[in-house]
Length: 175
Image 1 (cartoon, rainbow, N blue to C red):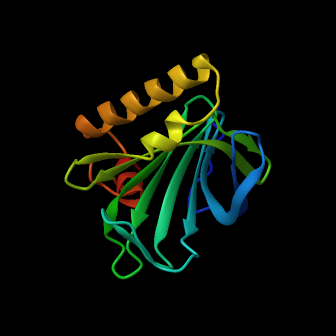
Image 2 (cartoon, one colour):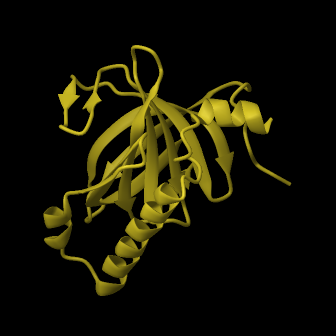
């Protein structure tokens, strides 16, 4: 029996907590749950900060983020949609420890290493120096690097969500 929640049902709020390696909160924001399963949650949130020009993309206030958090994977994925026309700008992926998914809250310990995947399939690894400087166990470092490889393979193979279809389109196609 599945514990999935349909996006058409009453949207439930969720708080996202980004934590540092010590478990201290760095950032927090709100979203709505689109789908919830035993090992993941998919949510929607709006970018609430001022416009950020990052070189490889621009995050604008109001951009729509469809976000996947996993309790059994060492990363999360943010599908970034333009506030202007809802087109997919790309996917921002954070290497994290597996998410803690609770009632109305999801928390993830950020491990500094990030990946931008463009709609053209380009892959840009970010913050490698910051990751290298983190004091973590070799087991955790290995798991993080393995997660990076997994994300690269998913992107190279254009497997969901990196297939160019938006989460909404994919939902409509798959019923």
